[in-house]
Length: 64
Image 1 (cartoon, rainbow, N blue to C red):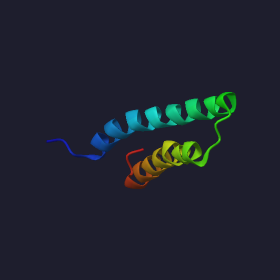
Image 2 (tube, rainbow, N blue to C red):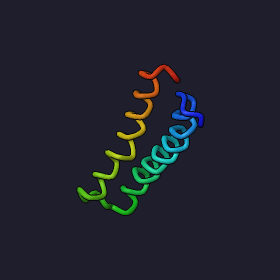
Image 3 (cartoon, rainbow, N blue to C red):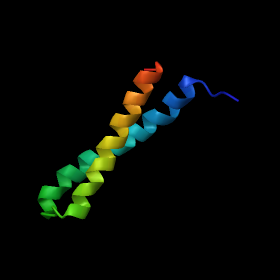
């Protein structure tokens, strides 16, 4: 099986793109719906935090 750094890159790119676009969409919709509740805003941590972590790990592993 193929388990090199390129495999992590192949898996991480779609996840990063999906989560960042979901976070952007949510931040665009929050003012229109006037929904600034803590539960709604907490999702942004995972929408932007996980991609930042994945990119940092990929760069630290040398596959970026």
